[in-house]
Length: 66
Image 1: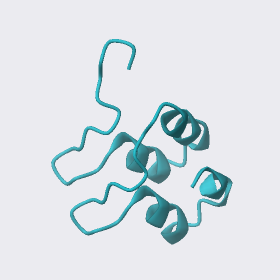
Image 2: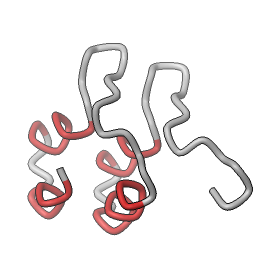
Image 3: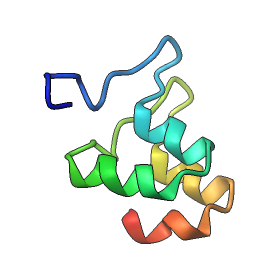
Image 4: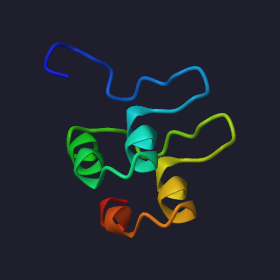
């Protein structure tokens, strides 16, 4: 990020680093990305946002970040 990486760069299916952090159950990384300005409203190709993934997969430790 310090060298200009896009914090919201989407991959081939529309997933952001924040979505990947949710799926990998990494609450500290979620907090870091959000603190650094990650856009929580970006939706993937299926219309799901990182917050929706938190709910869908029961990532209770991450709810407070959204």
